[in-house]
Amino acid sequence: MRWKRAAGRALLIFSLLLTGSAGAQAGEPAGGSDGRGPVTLVTGGDLTGYLRGVLNGWNEQHPREKVTLVELPDAADEVRAQMVTELRSRSARFDVLNIDVAWTSEFAAAGWIKPVDGGQFPLDRFLPPVVDTATFRGRLYAVPYVTNAALLYYRKDVLAKAGAHPPRTWAELAHLAKTVAPKYGLDGYAGQFLPYEGLTANVVEAVQSAGGTVLAGEGERVTVDSPAARRGLSFLLDGVREGWIPQRALSYKEEESREAFQDGRLLFLRNWPYAYALAGGPSSKVAGKFGAVPLPGPDGPGSSALGGSNLAVNTQSRHQKTATELISYLTSEAVQRRVLTEGALPPVWAGLYTDPQLVRRFPYLPTLKRSILAARPRLKSPQYDQVSLAVQAVMHDALVHRRSTDATVARLVPELRAIVSRG
Image 1: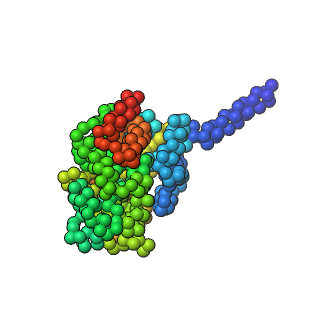
Image 2: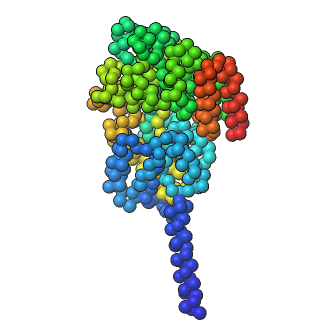
Image 3: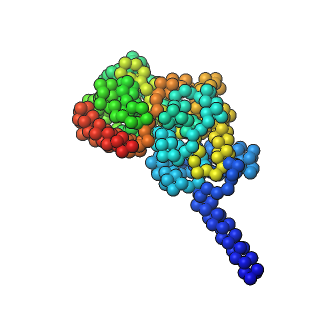
């Protein structure tokens, strides 16, 4: 009997250990009561491969709290889908999430990421607008990691021949796109107008540059039916109807639009800073012939939609102390410098944008800093994904079929209100 009882206890212990091991592999919270231990960082594809080198530095200093990198596909929609699948199942597979700035409100509202103590991070050294992307209802839920703001790229050689300066207003942009571009066999202006996340950014930029908003607060009210918002929508809709935004641009994402500019087919381009180095590369037909300025607006410089990503801790993480310290490491000045020099991504530390050595290597940094300081977060909403999809669908249809601003707003408002009411 004693043998049977002992064997039974041994079998029970073995079963519990096996179950615990399987649970840990499946991402179930277990152990780690002190909050320390190995962690996993999940991110979209690291296109330059710099991140593994950065994480190797952490692993050398923390042999008992090593970080494992999980790279998801490059497409933002797929990255979000895979993260959400894990988070909805209350999985602890991912400890630190590198999330698009636009997802912070959604993830916070769902309880998937934990609030952050801002006192643990040098937020006062960051560019001020980027910190706002990490907040939801007045609380900090993430830490800014990289940022981004759009620039207006222009053919400085063509404008010089025309005796013109880079446009500061929409009227100047439209005039040059309509009159100068055709003389040199160029299309006038393009952004990213295919129905995907890039179109949402372009629409939001136009609306906020005109002083309007699509949603107010934390996404509780629909505000796109205002004179200012209508003026922003009209900038894009009129551009297509008048022809200085070509029909072919309605199929552009970032890369298609960059290639059109880089191949010498476009006078003006709205795109992110990554395009600067590529347009100046040896294979570019416009190398040495282009410049970049902040986006124009109706009466002066406009306002970009803030891009970039934030680092957040999964509420189900078993090792939250280590996860938080990893975020502190990744947002340190030393690593932020590598984010720029090795990853070709805009850092969040303000001082790096005026570092003489970095400015010599990345001459667009002062312009980018001005754009970031004038930028605002994309739509903040717990239903961000649904809101963005609605904006994309309505605006692309309006651009393709050259609908009026009134007709566009009349369709967009009820769709957004239906989404907001479900929140």
